[in-house]
Length: 168
Image (cartoon, rainbow, N blue to C red):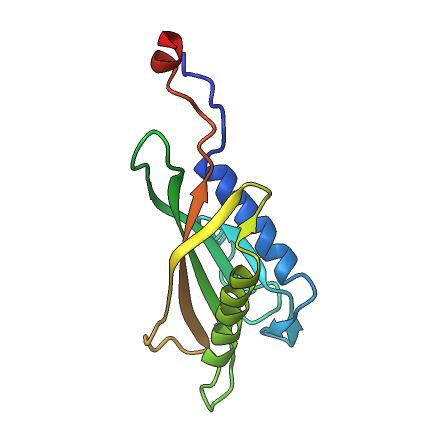
């Protein structure tokens, strides 16, 4: 039988990040396939496509979006918080022939970076630390513009070493 999970987990951090981003972008619209549309937020992966690309050029398409990926983590000792690398993969969509769709990806990235500069604590318990890194893709993918924001999130250490506690 598996042990009961207690305290804060990396998955809780990921869900809190998703909630934070949904709130941050709640009233914003972005370039979509048929006009302005809300930004979609996905957890870990894009949904599996179940059709024959019928929606690719409609606003039912998955883009623009952010995929919140719990990528890796580390715990350095018994006292420090767990550090979780959250990768926020951004994809915007723009059919313009001037190929300036990357600007929307940059604006989404900037909104995220500025938000966590002003408000590093999210979900009531988690904190975005440093370094905070980002990059834009230079891959040529017609109409799709990709970027990534890497955030190191601190997950509170609410657990105690039970063996040491028993000795105290």
